[in-house]
Image (cartoon, rainbow, N blue to C red; front, side, top):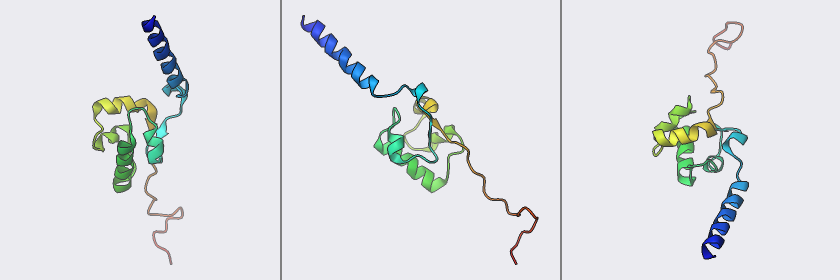
Amino acid sequence: MRRLITASLTGLLMALLLAGRPAAAETAPVNVNTASAAELASLQGIGAAKAQAIVEHREKNGPFGTVDDLKLVRGIGDKMLEQLRPQVTVGAVQAAPAANSANGNTTKR
C-alpha cells in the first residue's frame, strides 16, 4: 500500500512539473544574440551562471555567428551544445554597414 501511494504521488508530481513547461517542439527557439540572461536561464540545461557567461561572451566578442559558436563559452561542450541545439538560434546576424553609400560616395562633404 505504501509503495502504491509513493508511486502515485511521484507520478502526480512529475505530471504537475511537466504540465507547466511546454515541450521544446512547442516553443520558439531562443535567439542567443538577443536573449537576456533570464531568458537563457529558462533553457533546459542552462542555469543562471552559464546564462550570464553566454551574455558576457556575446558582449565581449560580438554576436554568435552559428549555434556551434556556443562551444566558445566556458562550460559548454559537445554534449551541452547538442542539448541546446533545438532550443536556440542565432537569428539573422547583421553584417557590418557597407563603406559606400548607395550613390557610390565614400566620404561626406
